Image 1 (tube, rainbow over the protein chains, first blue to last red):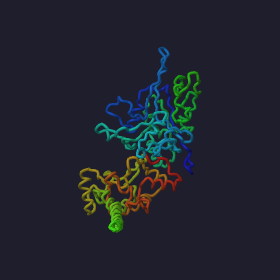
Image 2 (cartoon, rainbow over the protein chains, first blue to last red):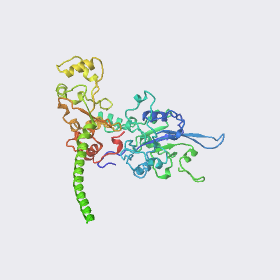
Image 3 (cartoon, rainbow over the protein chains, first blue to last red):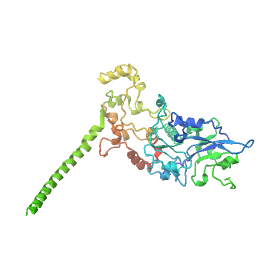
Image 4 (cartoon, each protein chain N blue to C red):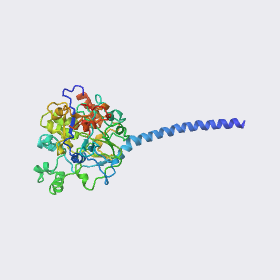
Length: 258
Length: 210
């Protein structure tokens, strides 16, 4: 929290309802086009693909009729850790990533990053990606890039920013209208906007009026690898116990949280 | 005997070369400094003239203030340099008797071609600068960052860094980075300095980066 700031500190976060997610991948597409995420001519080699938002497929490993699957969208978790001590932020030797105490968003500054990839090793969620080459856009596509997001170059790490540029633009609009605060619907991430099943809810986790505040309190809500102490700001919700158990490395006979 | 003579002779030689070495060293230093501080900056920046010689003073008298042409859009974004749409209301035909206006009307207005203005304060891609936050929220005047551009008769020469392609106004005219006014330099540390003074905090990365 900045010194002398009288405003209530925001903590933007997400609640993703895994019971609603159909695995359609609209969030991934929306994210890529919103954030100028580069892609390769042949995307079949997934090892060096870049996906700020990635949908994973979970299976319960049982046979019919108990067989069940679940799709799990995974953006950057924007870990708070212990008062901003996110795993990636604390290891960066270049201060190319920081934890914003006013919004709770973990940044990534491409022009400052020199590509050591220490943060990628530190991130337990594989949310960070390395640019192995300069982006090559299909002819004419460079004219349709989002001007509010700077494109990345070869040799730097990138990740989900919770569409921070949308927050900046929402604030600009508020200032121009003489307001200081923005409404919940004025700042929404591209994935939350695009989700046809309304599985992704985005908002300020500190604001009682925002729906994420209510949703995160649900007993069926969990976070990924919570016991590592990363204190992520992306919550998941599922009524299925095996899905909730899949969120962490529980021992066979250990009871899952909640 | 001849041995000692030889030794003293070579000693003398050594002393002589010592003097010339220092002389050449000093000449070398002087040349290097001249190259680094005078010649290199001259070579580094490509001088470009604006497509039209524009007088802010004349226009300011006619329209009254900056935001008649440099206005905020409804969504809070800043329009920056005006497009033909703003100029065409007054300049559909030649009004004055200046050569610059004649060129503007004939070559741009008549052909419906946008003027390729060179933007002095254009920041790199990774920078997010919000005019709304500074002008609307913090109620800063245009002059506090842009100086007395509103009363200038002509546009200054635009200097482009040949290596980075950025405008010289970002680094500043002074190659040593010494500044007297806010508008002398527009680097990240200058943003941070003012933010620290005014808000008590340099802010986080994403406040000014995108």
